[in-house]
Length: 196
Image (cartoon, rainbow, N blue to C red; front, top):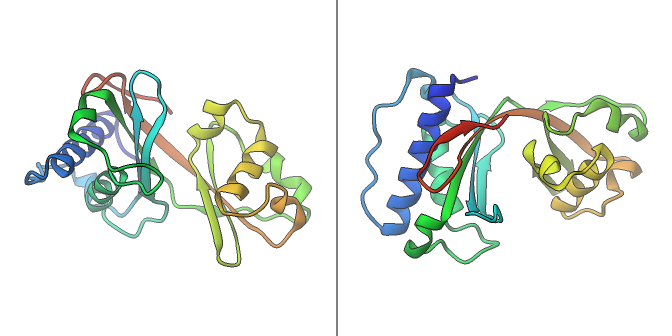
């Protein structure tokens, strides 16, 4: 989807957007590669350093916006993730930024829910599960971090949607998968590496 250099640029842009938002300073969009003009899904994750604990994660699973717009909006929104207190200036040197650029979600066809675990791959696929008004998404890196197998991944995605963990087995759920290219800082404002 993007080159390694473009992935690093995405993380630097997200870091700049996060810092500008928290400091209430003007954000100036730097010149970005042409690929950032394409519509892509993206998530920006803020992690505490060095613990790696989640501090905020917001994004757009569908390619509704040009990558440059989605990236900046996700970064700014992640500083005010409703699950946490807004990010404070004092924390800027205590966080790392991670950007996951997504492929468009594709619906998984299945006749029997018991087939689902065989149709996904932990560490490669992200999941979106929806039923009625409920919808939950987990990124590809989440099951790896928690050492879940495919069934646990499905259950936790259901719970993220506000459903019970067995909902995927009970039928009536739409399950979509997507892939993600993950780039992250190894330390606050430090070296950026590709993680997946």
